[in-house]
Length: 260
Image 1: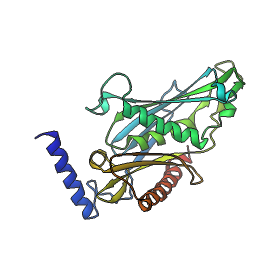
Image 2: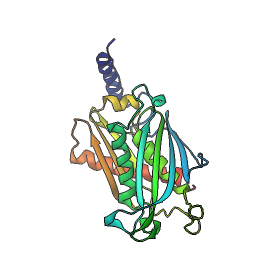
Image 3: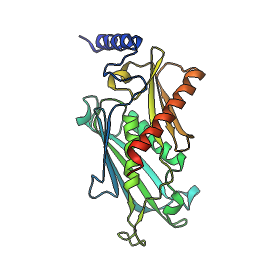
């Protein structure tokens, strides 16, 4: 049976479940999958986290090194976020340079951290205009069962919360904790047949009309938003999505990040 026929059957199955107020894995529309986080899992990294949400697994490593600041931010450290979609995670992923979807998801994670001011970049300045700390956030997808974006966002913040600036190793003074000021969290929702569902699994992502990721901060402000898919969202749906995303982000912080 061709992939196109399978896709139609899968969409019909998920849509019919939606009409009954159900999802294939038994969750409510506003319910996220179970989450497990372990930190300090990479010995040679300055910070790290392994995170599993449902069947999606991601490993995040944070490395720091001394570098040159950007000309327009001479007194601020630098953040560089990358993502690798490992072939072991999905038959759809191929070895080689990052694909467009990996670059896009890394940018959404990076934007949330940067626009929220999650890291006090001024405290990562060593000598203005000459030397700053460069923060490399490397995201490795180990298994894909949907919603890589949210797992990456949560894993990146968890890894940053454990990170230590290696001043002593680099001959730049004493070690210090990463200067974290906020904990931006991404929450993704999909529109299937007019209903919004949080934390889509792989099948729901495949058949949805619209997907939207909302990155919110501790005070409820929005630091990032990304929409994909051909469908449109009404103002009412968008506001509902933002409200639900902020609520879920707050729950995730309290349950998984505040004690790191």
